[in-house]
Length: 90
Image (cartoon, rainbow, N blue to C red; front, side, top):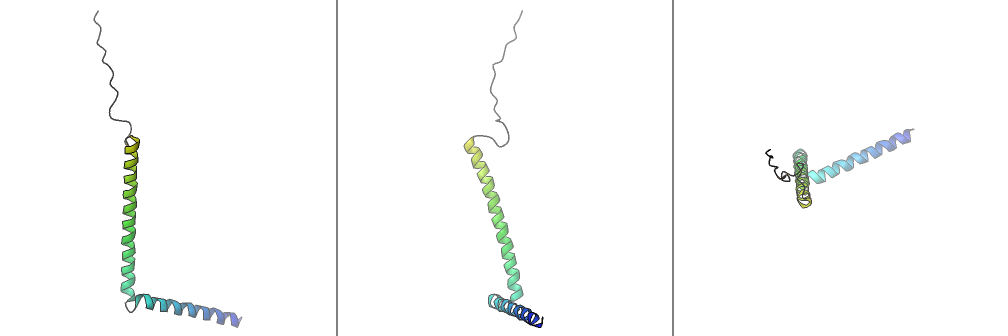
C-alpha cells in the first residue's frame, strides 16, 4: 500500500512540475496579465465569429429568397386584378 501512495505522489508532483514549467515558458514572469489578455482576446474572437455567422445566415436567407422569388413576409403584395362588374340597370 505504501508503494502505491509513493507512486501517486510522484506522478502528481511530476504533473505539477510540468504544468509550472509549461506556464513559465508560455507566460513568463507576467502570468496574470497575459492570462487576462488571452481570455479577453478569446472572448472578442468568439463575438466576432458569432457576428460573422449571424451575418452569413441573414445573407443566405436573403439571397435564397431572392433567387426563389418568394417574399419572406408571406404572399406577394400584388394581387391579381379582377374585372369590375358594372351593375345592370333594369
